[in-house]
Image 1 (cartoon, rainbow, N blue to C red):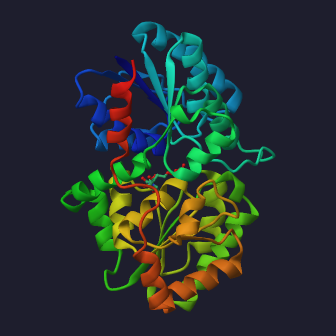
Image 2: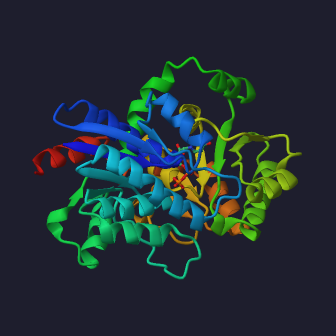
Image 3: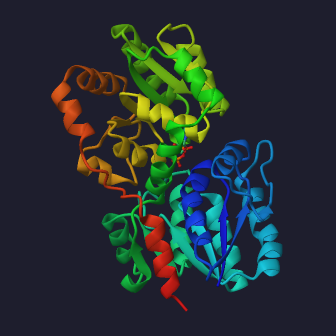
Amino acid sequence: RKNLIIFGTRPEAIKMAPLIKEFNNHPDFQTKVCVTAQHREMLDQVLDFFDLKPDYDLNLMRPNQNLYSLTADIITQLKTVLEDFVPNFVYVHGDTTTSMAASIAAFYSGSKVCHIEAGLRTNNKLSPFPEEINRQITSRIADYHFAPTEISRQNLLNEGISKDDIIITGNTVIDALLISKERVANLNSKEINSLKNLLNSDKKTILVTGHRRENHGEGFINICEALKQIALEFPDVQIVYPVHLNPHVRKPVYEILSEIKNIFLILPLSYPAFVWMMKECYIIITDSGGVQEEAPSLGKPVLVLRDTTERPEAVQAGTVILVGTDKKKIVNEVTELLKNKKRYAKMAELQNPYGDGKACKRIVNYMQQIF
Ligand code: UDP
């Protein structure tokens, strides 16, 4: 049985890495990896950490990349890969342009499509951003749907997908995190050592990340104003912010926050350093999907800088709070978590609704029964 696993961005690499490892432990599968490198550097850091060498590297990242040419390039270049390897199964992940375009290419080639992290939905087709459409198109094409949770399974059932083709697995991001958490504890890393030097281990640390296009402009300005107020009101708290490389993010962040002495603006962290930082911090403020899924496994409360989410499980479980980009709301919720120990402890001890670290085993077990 020939598997081709295709991905292009950092979060996909993190979430696919443990699946590749799991398949490689099973001799009845021949598994090859193809990266589109929709993101280059951030992808390569993850590949290095997990010691993965792609069999095919399309190297498609271009300056000022646009979705038209990216989609066309992925489909046309995958033709060669698919004709060379002729996989039985193509695995794609989540909601990226790589996943959507690779599903189309796999369909043209006659391979079966397996969708990992299937069934997340905002159902907001008016959104100008491609994620929701990417995941819906991928669901229309996929033959097997690996849903992380019951809610995601239900979303797929509601769209008419047969229950026999949906498998609840948990999210593979937890598999990756549990493997990495152990390794990071003993890792001799320059990056982690410099974080240790930068931070005062006696102070509470708030870790911040943000990159979503929906927050560009006014959203990031409000977020930064909120962080500024928190830093000034709580001089004994330190804020660490690995700032995304996108200029729409960097501009407001550096303009508003660079002069504040208990805010540390740093470059995006490699995945192991970020895992270390998540373990060390007290609260996480983020708009990232993956970080929301990871943080409850480390017992960290998360404030999510979005008004809607395709991940309602954590909000329902109480491990995350949606604060949007409203300055007052962000400041109030952080203040509450810093001052109210009971509330903090309650959030920190909740179980992670996204998985138990065995998602990849479930996927591989299922695939062994196919054929
Ligand atoms: N992450 C990282 N370095 C950082 C920030 C995040 O390695 O400086 C990791 C994080 O652990 C998570 C993933 O990147 O697994 C999330 O990626 P991102 O926020 O870019 O995408 P999203 O999850 O929103 O799709």
